[in-house]
Image (cartoon, rainbow, N blue to C red; front, side, top):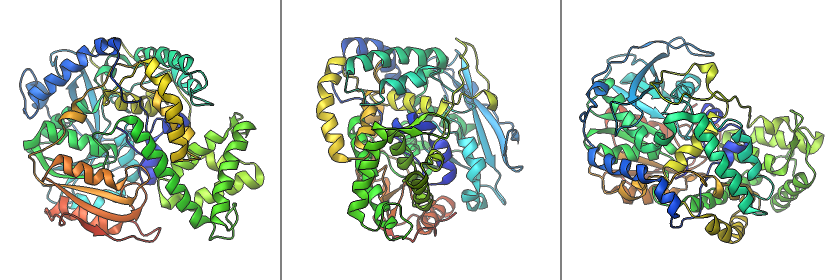
Length: 552
């Protein structure tokens, strides 16, 4: 399953680090039967899935009491740019829920206290996967202040992310990029796959014991520990993009613990990762065309005033930079694929269109890549994780700079069961390349690299695809945005049908990824549901709003 970038500027800063991270949006392999080796490697994963289904819905048992009985100690958050009224804490969870008496890890939490009488907490997940919830709430908490009229607003760094035992691929981060650079691995796919297999082993070395237990199934179980530690009988929850997958998995595991739950920018629960990559390519192509239609109405548009000519010019510019890169602000060659990655990130919010227009003008008129590079940043540090033992919170300065793309790849791969063999991947790449390029002449090649990213990793769980359905829970609000380039509206209705009568759909007839920050109507209806239990009728809608009229 693919998680997507968020609409809010603060979320975008955490949503991806560098071109590799953005390339992983849609990462996956062609759907096919797993090889014998992959099945053998996944015996433990399959057993863990059976254990999850057997224990789902339990409050505490089988050695979990010590985790469910803990209390959170809150104190002022320490770190750069932390608001004075933001409090931080932690909960301790087992690394492996099948072995609750084994090693543990700490999950970082942050909260804004309720301004008046608190009815409990509402837990936020901003998407990704791989973004730090703590940093996100610190940067963009003003968008959720209305919720403090009734709730403590709480978020967390999921396991493997931020200060919660962060994973890393170390030097393999660059090796992964190199293996899929240029022709997307299609020139010599077996060589690319061999390098990715070696890189997967290096990721395991640098990530430590949390890596086999980093997926959404375990993260959802952590949320139930948080719920109890926060003192709530039921989980009130607001999840964006990937956060919708996390919320749905929680609801399947703990149906009697679901309180008021909102899923905004709804992810698919069933489509193979290669199909999700195609959806991403089509969605971003549509978003680019919408941006160019807007751009050519402005005399300052660097592509002129003809929309068709502007689209053709973007394709030519990408090809030109791929064949003859220009120096970047950091001295490295800036390629067409670098430009595609930067544009793709900017397109997730209509609020960024003016900035994107200026950045493209800087490139075309002055050869200055700085504006485009401002949409993504990179850099890596490589602390090796301990082989075992209990893991406390990681110091902010020690979080690896590649943590976001490393976590995004690890979680998406852990949630997907498809692992075709090298022969199957090689045989399918030509056909896939044609489909991706047809889906988008700009983003198709960039997205094609994603079909290789899980190669060499253990087969993921089948729980999300097979078991998250036909839920018997309290009503949940699902928000789908018609112009969403990352999570198409049809995923909202398909997921609602899959979850069953508990799912209520709000149709946001606007642009951009997710609706809470970009639509005052969506913002109001979500807050009314969370605060007062006022649920809009199934299928009701919010109309389109002009750019710049969102909640922030």
